[in-house]
Amino acid sequence: MAFEVEGKLHRLFATEQKSASFQTREFVLEIPDGNYPQLVKFQAVQERCALLDAFKEGDRLKVSFDLRGREWNGKYLTNLNAWRVERAGEGGGNQENTPGEQFPADPFPNYSEAPPATGNFDDLPF
Image 1 (spheres, rainbow, N blue to C red):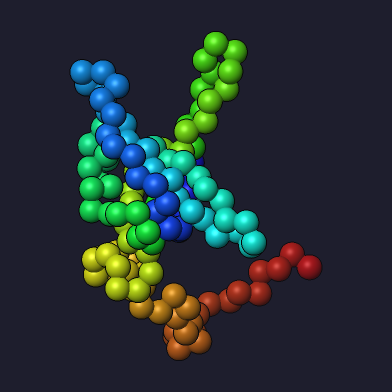
Image 2: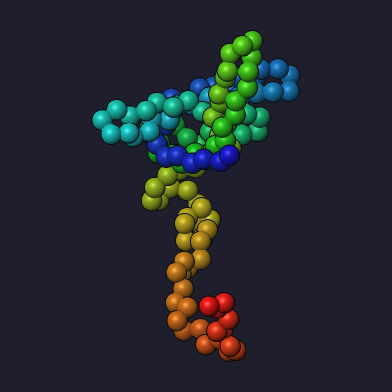
């Protein structure tokens, strides 16, 4: 399951080497929610830890993430596993990440200009 959220980078932690072949980096995003903004912790693993090097606390970010959950000693743990982090809003990020590049120029084309269909379409059973 993939999700996406925007918010302000509230806290950025250092990369932690968990084992010889595994590293993680956590960060907290402040997400606006009415009068009480939510502080949500995310985790980046392995080579994705380096994605956060380009940002500093206070930056507005857009984070794409997956939900991960597991049981450990009778307790249930949930991680928000970030797999893409980019600047949010205008002027942030590359041209290739702008909505105009991801979607067609006209998401609602005018189909009334299409040529009329030919044939007998009076095939209703009643």
